[in-house]
Length: 391
Image (cartoon, rainbow, N blue to C red; front, side, top):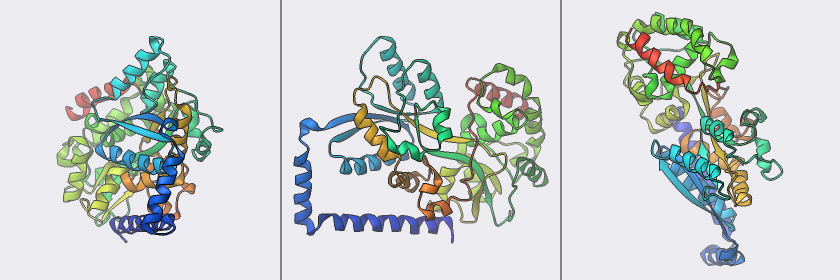
C-alpha cells in the first residue's frame, strides 16, 4: 500500500474516533451537549481563567498545528486560554529573542511572553542570559515521555516537542536497493552520474545536511556540536570529497535552490535520489505531488536533523498554566496530532505512539544526528561556494 493511501486511511481512522468521541460526550443529543457546555463554562468564572501567550514562527503549517493543539487543549482545560502569536518564518524570531534579552538585562520582573518556540541556537543564546526556566517532571509529568538524552542536551530548559530529519528520498522503480551507508551512497553517485542532486546548502537544510555530513564524517563525533574554529582546519577531506563528486551530480554540478528544488527534480524523474526533509517528503507523498514509487530511508552514519523546542521564559508569571499546556503537548494524543498535521516525528518516545504510526515511520525513525556548529556554518557555506560550486 502506498504512503499516500496509508496516511489517508490513518487520518480517516483518527477522524472517525474524533467523531465518535464527540457523539458520546453529549450523553443525550444537541440539547444536553449545549447544557453540559454551559455548565462547564459556568464552573470556571472568567476571573479564574489564566491567559498565556505562545510565540512561534515558521511555515504556515506550524501555525495550523498550534491552532489545532490549542483548541484541543482549551476544550480540556477551561481555566486556561492560549493566545497564539504567530510570526511568519524570517520575520520575528530574532525580535522575540531580543525582547526577552532586553527585558532580562533591564531588570524587568515579568514578561508577556509565556512560552516560546525556537531552535537549539535560541536555547544556547538564552541560556547564557539566564532566560529560561528549568523544567521539573513533578510539575510537567509527561516530561517522562521524552528521551532523557534530549532533555540533558538542553539542561532541562526546553521541551523537544516535534522533530524531523534529513533522509534519502529515492525512486524505488529505478533504485530497488538504496545505499545503506554514507560510503555506499557516494559510490552510488559515482556509478550513476547525473541521477543525484542536493540543493545549494545555503538555501535549505537538506543540502546543508548532505554537505555537513560529508565533512564531519571525517571528524570526531563531538565536533558536530562544537563551534571551535580549530575544526575548520580539519575540513579538507570532506571538501575534497564534495568536489570530487561534483561532476557526478545533476547536470554535472548544478545545485538547485531550496529544499523544494531537489524534490521537484525527483518528482519529474530527472534524478533518482536526493536528500530531503522527512516531513516535506511525507507530506508531498500524501498529497500526490511525489509519485508513490518514491521511498524514504536513512543511512549510517545518519544525516542530521533535530527538534523544535518550547522554552518557558523565567520572567513569565503564569508558569502553572504554561506547565499544563506543556504536559498536554507531550501526551500521546497531542503527539499524534503533530504527526497527522505536519508529518513530524513525535517529541516523545516512539514506543508510546500508536502502533500504526510506528509502522508508518519505521523507514525513517531510526534516528538522526544533531548538528550545531554556530558561526562555523557560514564558513562552510563560503568554502562550499568557492571550492565546490565554483571549483
